[in-house]
Structures are given as structure tokens and as C-alpha cells.
Length: 224
Image 1 (tube, rainbow, N blue to C red):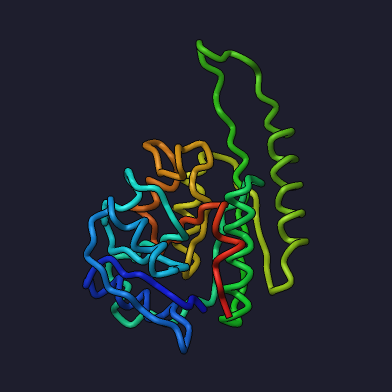
Image 2 (cartoon, rainbow, N blue to C red; image 1 turned 180 degrees about the vertical axis):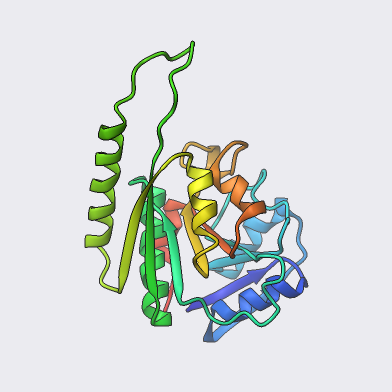
């Protein structure tokens, strides 16, 4: 799977997740470097994944040099390799990168991919009173789902959920073994920003979460 994983903690859950995802001939690098130095460390080590402990502050103000996996509390208590890989998809470059990585992981693990597209319906407000066509939003989401599934050559299925992305992805995290999503594309230098689904899921996902920045995931993530 991943050839070079940097683990930022001796936390049992983080170490267990890293051991699950590392390739048979891969390497784990343990580092307690502060978040400010983590980007340089990952680049120097040629890391293709960083694994952090639950509630680790990484991502709150640190640019992501490669995909970052956040362990779930209690993961180390007998969890096996993930066989159902979930991915939140919205058609963005970051989501494309997450989808590509989900495909590679499912292929390596003989698993399946569950793609979820959220049709986000915002209620009219005083600041933005425009009417929103719910049917059009859902139709667009179904189109995105169809295109995503067409790109997968591994067992896969998906669904469309109407609502808030954070709620829909948190619900998905209860039914999959690993959840992937793109890092917020609007965030400066791929930082996670308050109010994004990724930030909420860092703390409340029901399974390990992998946040994938678009500029490195497809080109440098090596999964066998």
C-alpha cells in the first residue's frame, strides 16, 4: 500500500492505523515534530502518507504536503484492514484525487468503494433570498455520482444524499472502514478551515479519515 508513512505520535490508535496501511516492504517513520515542521519532514522523508492521532491539531493551521490519515479513538482494539472504502465526492480536483486514491486502496485490499455525493440544499436567507431548485441540485449530484462510478474499475456503489455535507459524510463514516475526502480547495495552501466538513470529521468521524490534497495525491501516492 503506502511505501513511506510518517506517524506523528506514539498513540496506539495512530500506530495501529499506520501498520494497517503500510506496504509489506514499506517504512514507518515516527516523529514528534511540531506541526510547523511536519511539512518539511514529510518532504524530506518522501512520505506519501502522514498518520496522526485522534484530536491531533495537525490540519488546523498546517499545509498538507501529502494525504493525512486521522486515526479514530479505539481503532487499535482489534481493527483489521479496511475492506469498505468510502469517499465523499463533489467533482472538485481534491475530490478527484480522493476518488483515485480510494480506487487504488480498494484494489490493493480487495475491497469495495462507496461513493457519496451530497446535494447540498441551502435555505433562502435575507442575504441570499434566491429560490433554489432542489430537483436540479439532486439531478446534478446524480450526474456526478454516475461519472465517478464510471471511472472506477474496482467493485463500487454509491448514493446521493440531500442535506449538509458534514452530516452526510459523518453518517457515511459509520458504515465504512475508511473515509476519504478532498482537502478544502478554497483553503489557502490546502489548510483546513473552520466550518468545512473535513474539519468536523477530524473530530467526529466514525472511522479513520484520510484528507487528500489535490496537488500531490495522484502523482505521488504509491499504493500497491
